[in-house]
Structure formats: structure tokens, C-alpha cells
Image: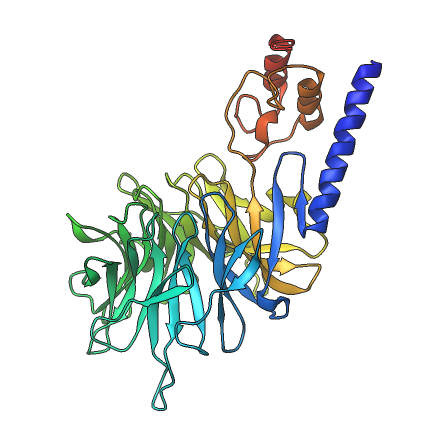
Length: 429
């Protein structure tokens, strides 16, 4: 009994030390190895920032910050913090919208000058090691890059033709910018997402009546309309790494309000619902498309707050502010989840940082994905009192991010998990 008391004291002391350290670093951590870090805004003074990409290991985040021009494209790492990657054409605005899985290559667009007769021209870019590459256009003045393949070799976006209409493009160093065309009868198109291998491109194509249909493009099949005919219109905003799941937004012909969708070849375009409100959008999915992230409002009122969501086939729509409430400090609110790592562990977006009163970028580490095991909760090759206590302290908790205390990975800590620990008690010790 005395030994168990010492064990509990040591465990609590270590956790308290880790928690104090994490708070000092601008992050909060809980007992499940989950953490929330506010990355701030560029320069620490701008009141707004957006995240648009997170690396596979969660150690690189890209996006942009600013309210008025110039906007600043940033790349964040734990070692460097939020760094300005520069401008495509100084001193004009530049925005980062996607990156390779290792965070080495960033894509986006920047203003290239001023136009006294209309809007300023943009150019899509590829950035690597401080060097910008202008991706060009399809004969017009403007282009935008929105996403990159896993290694950054394939970039997708939209570019103007000489007649002013936009076309979805797919760019590689070998081919340059390739026009992907439109859906039959459409006038314009925009590519917003690309699979890990670069062979599946998703986006939307627009018709003369201002109706948009989501599309999925492959080298063999070309551009395919994946719109649900029972919906007014739809736009694809992201795609799973394997290219089999498409996510985005749908709505009535007026596109007001919008709602999140998930598309598969087997099930078609399916409404994911909301967190209680009437608006929402799905922005990204993990590698196999089993986890979708985005934003939704919480109630039908005009002043309803946005909340970042995570959707899974098992759990449906999940408010990240509820699931990870233990990580939130007074005034914190996760408003929009914009990107997720391939394994689903890391989620980035923006929200309200209660400590600063600003809309800032957040990095949420949801902890290791659940893998069923023999009861060795702390993974030290010995099933002992510490493992038993961990399950007992978490008993009755439920959700998709419980960690190793959910021994059998059924999303609830119950007597089944406890029995596994008891049955194997003493193994490896």
C-alpha cells in the first residue's frame, strides 16, 4: 500500500511538472498526451491569422496573418516560431494555403503589383528554402495555388484564361501549368485539393446560372461531376490522401446556408449535418477519409458562434471544444478546423485565444490513435498498479481520443478494459 501511494505521488508530481512546463510554452496538456498550442499571429500584434496546412508529424504549420494589406505568409515550427516566408513580389501581400507533408514546400499566392483600373493581379507560387517560384497563368493575369501532393511535386489551383474565366490547373515541374477544363456546359473551374500521389484533384466547376458542382479529376477519367442532384450546389474543398473521399460544402441554389458533405464512390455525396446550427463546411480529411474536419455553428440563431468539428463514421459530428474542454483556458474557443495530418492526430485551424483576445492559429495534438493492447497502459512492458490505476481514474469516460486507457479501443473506458488489465496483471514485471 505504501508503495502504491508513492507511485501515485510520483505520477501526480511528474504530471504537474509537465503541465506547468506546457503552460509556460503557451500550450496546455492533459493526462492522455493531448495538447493544445496557440501559435499566435504574425509579429504577435496582428489580430487575425489562419492556418492552412500541418505536416505529417505536426511540427510544421503554414498559413497567413493580417487584416489589412499586406497579408503575411508564415511557416511555424516549435524551434523557430511563426516566421514570415517573404513575398512573391515585395512588398505586396502573400498567403500560404498548402504544403508538402514534411512542411518543406509551401504553396499559395501573392499579389504581383497594383492595377489602377481594377483588382490587383495574383500569382500562384511554390516556395522552398526561401525561394519563390511563380507558377504562371493560363493566358490571363491571375492564378492561385491551393494544395500540394505529399512531396510537393504536384500543385493544384486555378488560373485565368485570356477571356477572364478561371480554370482548374495541375502543375508539375515537367509539365508546367495544365488546364484541367470544366464539367460539360460549365464556364469556369477551381481546384482546391489533391491526393497524396497527385493523381486525384478535386474542386468545383461553375455554370452560367452561377450554380457550382463539385468535381473529382483523375488522369484516366478526367473531370467527373460528383454533385448530389438533390442539393442546390456544391464545392469540393479537400480530399483524403488516398483520393477516395472528397469533402466540402453544399447548399441550396443561393448557397445560403452551406452545409458540410463527404463523398465516396459507394455512398455518393452525403450531408454530415451540423453541431446544432444551420451552417457548416468540411475542409479536410485524413489519409483514408475516416476523419473529417471543418467548422459549424452551434445553434440556429443569427449570432451563433462557430465551432471546429471533427466527424467520424462512428461518432458523427463532434465539437472539438467539448471533446478537448480540458485543454481550453477561460475564453478559449476553437472556431474552425482547416487541416488535419494524414494519421488524424494533428489538427490546425483558428479560434479565439482567451489569453490575448485575438483570433489566432491553434495546433491540436489529439494524442496517439487508439491501438488495442494487453493492458500495459503506460507502455513500459509491465502490467502493474500504474496501469490499473490509469484505467480506474478514467473509468466511465467516452470518446474517440481517450488514449491507451481505452484498452480495447471501443471508445469507452469500462469494465471490459479493466478486466483486460486484471487478466494480464503482472505480465512483464
